Length: 163
Image (cartoon, rainbow, N blue to C red; front, side, top):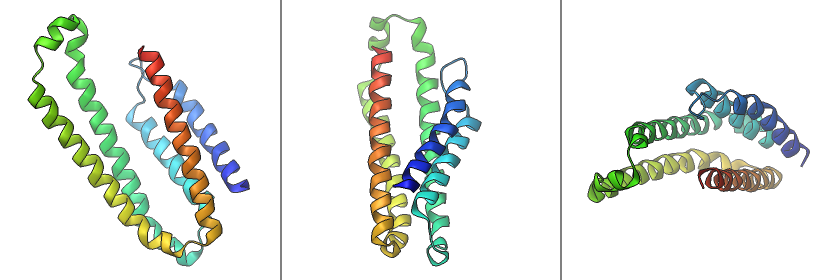
């Protein structure tokens, strides 16, 4: 539990400056997103307290985490590009100019990419997870629960801002 508390404290320290460093559009820059990914990786590693034997399984996990974050950033940039021109038009014009088939195809492509990234991450974790001690597995589960709560809170906060 001490490791989890230390990890969360580190995350708050890392994220606080990033929250204030947002661009004028309200989004984090690529540099800030990379720093946030770095902080997340450090927290997970610190929480797990890997042994030297376990450490050799870490590089593919870190690579999968970084690739997933990079792909997410690219998807967000694509959304921004697609929505930039819509802000000047009224909702009726926006709805008339949308192609529902293209929307479904684009959504399917996005979901396929997210699924592939998640599969790569799960595959990268598999060898290390088998070597974790029960205590490490418990810390990993606790960190996952905390992270999911934070994501859920952020989503709800974003919905309220949009509303």
